[in-house]
Length: 389
Ligand SMILES: *Cc1c(COP(=O)(O)O)cnc(C)c1O
Image 1 (cartoon, rainbow, N blue to C red):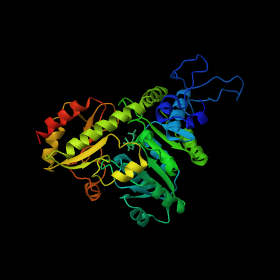
Image 2: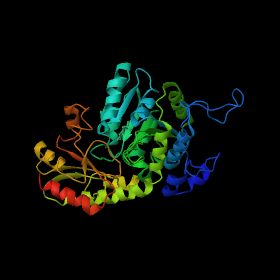
Image 3: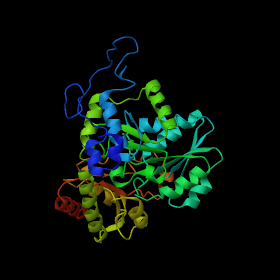
Image 4: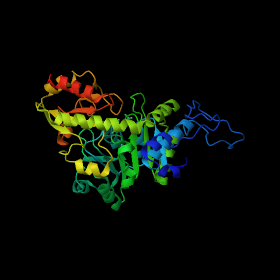
């Protein structure tokens, strides 16, 4: 199937077939791991589209086509990690330029913008993106990039992509959406006008907690050229084995997301009804502030749930965090297995405590990446942990 056929296919079909064709040399149905650094040429410049492994590799090309098909993009560019993908976009800015990002976001993105790009004269601010007025007030004449995460991490706030894209484009500002939490199964930012979609494929796309990777998807030829130039010149490329593993993951993305969503919904409802639990953060709860917006711009509410205990002391949170058996206490998210995380000391420790608190991230917040295990086992595990709180 070519890219045009793919446009009419549903997400499950795209996940399996986008960018995939039987291997031309053998007919192998699954894309082989092309473990090679270089490619033979018949005469100088006469090659089959591949010259050197840093620039391109057929396994990587298959993954790029798959991810582009899932996001409805014309270009896919893969990187060695999610932060390498973010880094490549930020490198397209120049000293004096300004990035406006959401204040509830992946901690490593904050660290990259502030500590790596700050010294090169690229400034960044982090604001609550739940209102358009708040974002508008924080824009500067030198703002060149709006960096959106939705749902946000770890408070799963929902950001109005269409409204913010319209605002940014009216001022000539490019918009990047980190779609790691939602995945293209639940939300496709390009449909809302985003210029760039970023993924840590380490999470749901790979889906098995066994590989690190990143990608940028775009419909802009200009952005794609700039990013491919950086891939060639700066070289943060994923290896063929990593691309193969990620591709193996994406084929089941549609079915996995269905289970992640149904398990997370059940857990959020269970937690909300329990007197030992305080606030529950999940876009699928009718009581949640971003619920209606999420229902409009997403095809499901995702697998990430955060909550505070009614006793919101660190001690009580620590007791819960150390007493689950099915949930593993670990950083990261999006794998088949359920994980529990303490953002303040784990994933979000690189954000200064005052800034974390100002953004509404409580020191005792617990974040769950709900896996695809049997629902009753997950709830029983939480029940046992809550009894220790
Ligand atoms: C993990 C993550 C990243 C960074 O990706 P790596 O693959 O770990 O480099 C970026 N954004 C979000 C939302 C993430 O969860």
